[in-house]
Image (tube, rainbow, N blue to C red; front, top):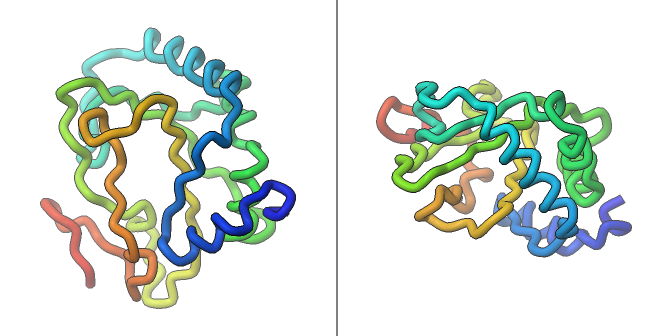
Length: 168
């Protein structure tokens, strides 16, 4: 399946580093439709909702699959489906689909692990495949995700310690 999508080499990089950037994979027309759908949702959001400690601020439309048909295309995008299948095996489940609209001045999200709420112990099988679709320039000044390479190989996941990440 991954061979058909041209991601065999990148999948090896993902396994060794714990993260991967696929550039210029999404057709421009799909990016435009996603952006338009998100802007439409942004207009309908209630401003001023308190953010969780991990969101850092900004607006966060959730349950996107039920809000616009373009998000079904995102959820079933062949290259990402192939990667998820390789990492998670048959029968994986889309758990959530959300967007984070980061505006100038939004505080940086605290460093966190996406699998920290799942208590797996030291075996740590791969149970999560988080994808981020950067629809515009992705930089520290506009909310880019910080990645700590190699943490996927720690014997236990990092945990939120209230003010910082801890191991053990």
